[in-house]
Length: 133
View 1 (tube, rainbow, N blue to C red):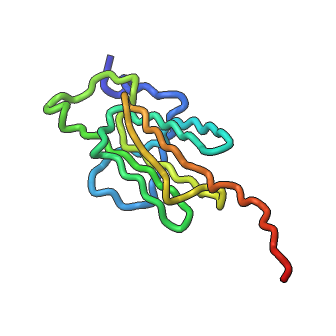
View 2: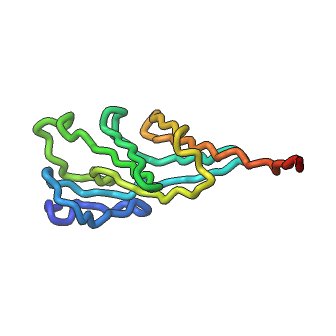
């Protein structure tokens, strides 16, 4: 087996062709994501294995929620992969938020490589009766 044919592909994990300049050569992936909804909130679950809490950035700007996570490859030391079934790389994903989302109450936690975002919805406005004087 030679080094050229040892690399395997991972189905479902999509590599992103980043338009940004990178200071560290690394592949960037769109994390696998599930979005669920109740009447009061949205729940977003994103697979980000190998990313610690300190390596995740969640940014909200102009109705765009941008999530990025970086893998710390230093923990592998001098080891060089000779066979991998899971490609290492950083993650990034963006979502445009609707007016239904209360942008001031977004919560984010990570556990066991899964980033959990809770986006509360703006309470539905009740009709207002205007008194005629």
